[in-house]
Image 1: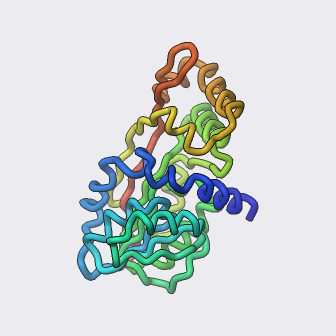
Image 2: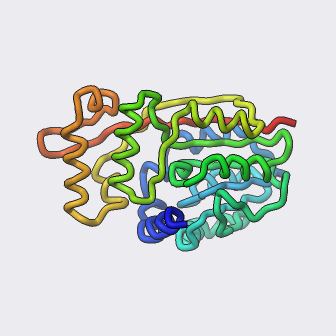
Length: 255
């Protein structure tokens, strides 16, 4: 529970920033996911760890009902203020690893840029499979760690320094094992480099100038291959941007 309490504290404190964040509120994946999931007017959708409600908003225009869940009540309250005109979105405080829904309830389940905060990804996948109808689809998007150990260690250490509620970005190979275990078939997938504007990224979670300096120095003093892989753009004193790996995958629950 300590980790989940940290997630709640972090997202409560930074809730406005997550709603307006360019990383979360924009991106072609929000329109692309509609193409992938092919929603229909009679469908019911669950958006897990909705954050600023960006996926819920995008999907709501195409389906009957969306349940937007998040472990952080204040985050949901903030999202709902920005989405006052979307009457078919219902906001539910819920833990991604203990969902308050009956088995086989939803036609579609989505989860975008959130799972790296989950302490138990296997439990999250178990719950996702449980509430999804047979033949239903699961659309998953998250930051992922590179398969190379050195790069995996770097990005997860960096994220933890910058956001104490970060647990771990898994590798794609680790997610694939979980999908297989819980009877999901991968229908479509795409891995891409996502560019993060450094100033917005660092200010979204950190207030202390000392903590910000520690993150910057950690990045600047890494080896050249780290700088190359993550495309760290900097001069001697400042960082402008860098990239991380993001994975978008559509799965179907076996019938």
